[in-house]
Every structure is written in C-alpha cells, then in structure tokens.
Length: 430
Ligand code: BGC
Image (spheres, helix red, strand yellow):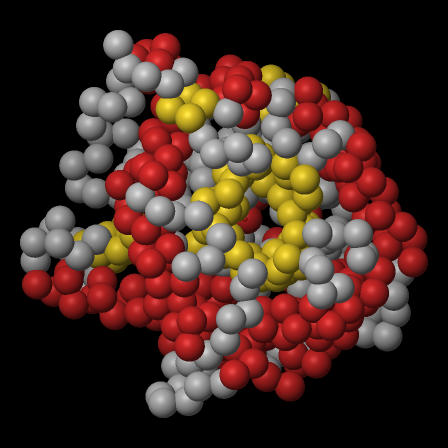
C-alpha cells in the first residue's frame, strides 16, 4: 500500500483565470478588435459576455471557496481602468476593489495579474509593446494600480512574456497579427522591460507587496528524439523562449543585447510564477521545413488543444528554475482542456506528484494554481476547449461542478494526495 503524499504547511491551493477570458463585456482592447476579423477565431466565436465573471465574481469566489481552494489568481483589465490615454475610470477601480474584498471575504489569497495579453486600443494604436517609447504608458498604468490597490499582497506583473511575444509577433495568432523575427525579439525585450518597470513601480508605493513575473516554461525536447538537428533547434528555441528571462532576472542581462547588463533588470522578482502545460517538439513533415508540436510522436492521449501530457518536463523545468534563481516559486498555471473528467483528474494528480518531487529535492514551491478556475474563452480557439475545474454552460451562465472540482478540493482541504488516489490513478506506476 502506498503512503499519502503530503504537501508543505501553508501551501496555496488555487486556480487561475484572466480578466479578458472570463469577465465578458470588454470592448476597448486589442483582442476585441482582433476578433472582429472574420475567420480569426475557431467556430467564429466571439468573447462577448464570456463567463460573465464581471458580474458573477462573488458567486464564483464563493463556489471556489466552497470547494476548499484557498487562493485565486485573477487579473485587472487595463482597458477598463484606462479606457483612453488620459482617463482613469474610478468606477472600474471601485469594481476591482470589490473583487479583492470578495476574495478576502471568501478566504482566497489573491494573486493579481497586471498584464495578461490584452492592451487598450489607444495603446495598441500607438504600436503597443513593439515600441520602446510606449513603455511610459504602461508605467503610468502601474502607478495607478500601485496607488489605488495597496491592499494587494501578491502582484503578477506580466503573464507569459514569451507566449505573448510569440502569439502577437511571431505566429500572427493575436493582434497585431505580425509575423517577424525582429518584431518577436523586440516585443520580448520590451515586455520583459515592462515587467521590471512594474516591479519597481509597485515597490516604490508598496514595498511590502510581493511582486513576481509569470513565465511559461515549455519543455523543449532535446535528447528524446535523438536527432542532432532537433537538439540544435531546441537549444536555440529554449534560449529565446526560456533562458533570456532567467538570465535577465539572475544577472540583469538585457534580453538579446550582447554583453549588456542593467542593474534595474536584475533581481526583479520576489517569486517566480511558473506555468507549465507541455513539451515543445520540433518535427519535420512532408512539404514543411519544420513544425513545432506540443506532443511527442508516440503520445497516446492528447488534450482538446492537441497537446500531449508530459509531467516529467514539469519537474525538470521546476528544478531548473529553482537551481538558477533560488527564489520562492508558485505554479501559477497548469491544466488541460478536455471533456473527459477522469483525464482531468489524472492529469492534475500526475503533475502534482512532480511538484512534490521537486519540493522534496529542495525547490521552494509554495502553491499550485490549476488553469482554469472556470471554463474560459481560449483566445483563437474560442469557447470549445474546456479547461475549467468548474464548468460553464455559456447559454445560461450556470456553473457545473465537475468531479475534478471535488477531487482537487479534497486534496486542498487535507493538504495531501491520499494513498487511495495514488492507487486508483496508478500515480507511481510511471
Ligand atoms: C495562458 C492562458 C491560456 C492557457 C491555456 C496560458 O498560456 O496564460 O491565457 O488560456 O495558457 O492555453
């Protein structure tokens, strides 16, 4: 018989959402504009009212708390706070105060995200994060947040700088639909600078707040494929997508600028938010020079996103970041899109086992946030993928309690994975 797997005391057990993907009614940002272009989003979906979380946040918080989670990572929508360049919308500031109060009332530790992909239309029309000179507008926004929300203890600055820059500027999968390596490099550099700007601004007003970047760490397959070209390309991609952020935080190295280190970029994360979903595997297919797949060729089961399941890459990534940065870590996103709730439970458990393994080997991991707390608008994939621990019926806005909701809650409540779950899902089998 196996033994229970115990997690550290005070471990945060939460889940995550972003403002745009759940709130609904956001019509003043670049994603809204992007969506209006026909055929941009799967099934021609539009974010529209999304989960109506803007109005239903209190009952959502109550539900999350009822199922025993003790934390929620959520976001503030910049285009609500600053609908135009020189306007601060006090009603929206009030709204987010209410959101934070409700989190507190429901005993949910809040992680508040400043930038999760979307920007106001007035900012994107100036060139958004592609223009270095636009960073001053972002700094202003951070100042407004710092002054108005001193109650926030945990700030997340930028969600996934690498995914943002590749989605926006490399794959043309988001506004402004650009496809250029130069734009990707410039965009990555500027958004990483934006992180450091946010860090300093918050610390200036609220030195006690804890501030961290949220970084997605895809695990680039290097050895498993065994082919030399895969190894070389994976190494380069890893450098561009992962290492630049680690180098910047550890040494102040200016992203993609040879030999330049800047003090103001160094040590700008009190903790790191670690997001993990999948492997990144380069393959060659007929008629194509190279393609990037989020699965391995022999993967038996994939998610609705066509992503494989590779918990080992999670463990390796956690250990790598721990060794390089030696700062507290929170898993700020990990999850899958599926209609099969058994698959969801197994996925969660298998990834939690790797979290615990990393903790046992010294990584200072203090919490885990499943993505997503509720189903969400999945950018170009629309509403089809079901990531939620709690489901959403978009026609009625009814919330659906999945078995995974209950299972995750029982783990959160007891701070352990029981021997029974270990046996049932054969967790130690591979
Ligand atoms: C993003 C989320 C997204 C999730 C699932 C993350 O990269 O932060 O916005 O919904 O992945 O694709």
